[in-house]
Amino acid sequence: EAGVTQFPSHSVIEKGQTVTLRCDPISGHDNLYWYRRVMGKEIKFLLHFVKESKQDESGMPNNRFLAERTGGTYSTLKVQPAELEDSGVYFCASRPGLAGSDTQYFGPGTRLTVL
Amino acid sequence: AQSVSQHNHHVILSEAASLELGCNYSYGGTVNLFWYVQYPGQHLQLLLKYFSGDPLVKGIKGFEAEFIKSKFSFNLRKPSVQWSDTAEYFCAVNAGSSNTGKLIFGQGTTLQVKP
Image (cartoon, rainbow over all chains, first blue to last red; front, side, top):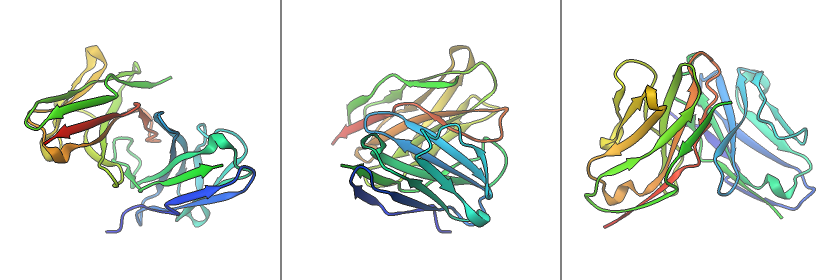
């Protein structure tokens, strides 16, 4: 079974540019999460999809961040325009069911550097 | 709001030493508790989790954790560490009554095991 995949693994962009991160969850997993870790800080929740619907986007920092999950399969997270403080590692995770105790399976992360 | 505190940010041990990593959380209701590990160059993976039943849970690679409700703690233990346990360890919680599964993470503890 393929795991959660993320693309790209690294991205270096200049302030003001746009970047789009992609996450492919494990097949059949309705729940998809985005998290971010800024250097030296804890991993923080950004948002949660159930299929194509946003269940919880309370962690999104501001309106420069836009997440989509068209068709309930892969998801994209766009940052436009990027700012220096957006640098960090963006993790995607997926889990199959409705129980909060279900394990979330994480992808390898995308390291974003904004110069 | 829920929060998670990991007491040690960086731990250095010699092989065969015993390990205990502290984790405390703040939330008054039912919780699900997790320990994740990130080995160098790899993605986050689940070590163990507690959601109900026996408060002493056993995970992979000889790790275990004890949920002490009165202390709001979920400390991770291993009797004898190996060099291959060098990694970053994350404690996480989510509210048991919620089905969103959103994880709140601690800051992480980097464990370095000297051969």
